[in-house]
Image (cartoon, rainbow, N blue to C red; front, side, top):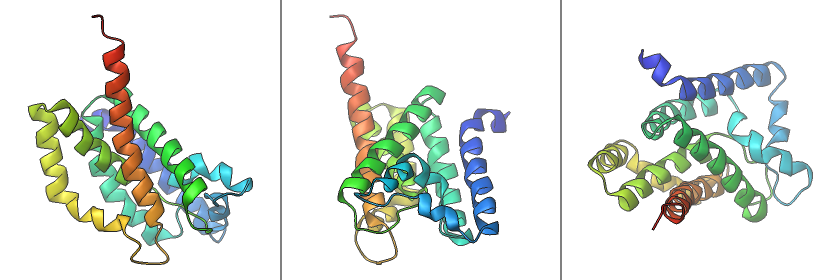
Length: 185
């Protein structure tokens, strides 16, 4: 029953691991399909980057927060989960492509930061007991993620983290803006 409710998150994580296993067997050459800023070939990386990782430990380190924050995002429903997932992936990927350092940017951590941002923004904008409780659990569990938006390590895409966080906030803001404009007056 729980697995059925978590199916979208489990499918996403399974897909990431299938790609990682294939990538492992071919020497992680799929990383070249990541986001390479301001290059025509790097555009393909915008939708693909969350599925690609630079190694086993990179994939493993994104799996648990992706499962937990993805499940918390899924608490708002499957439609909202997929809208958040797709919009964060595309918006944060586009921002990385335009503004990030010239290097391949891969990994699901931008999506993790997007879920984090969306969860916090939803609590601030909606102010329901449920969204506030989910945000409190999120901050208590993953508040340390915010260090990831700082350029502390040259091999970590802080840009992907920062733009993922921003994209998560923007997703909720746009959802609120468009849902308000469609309600009858």
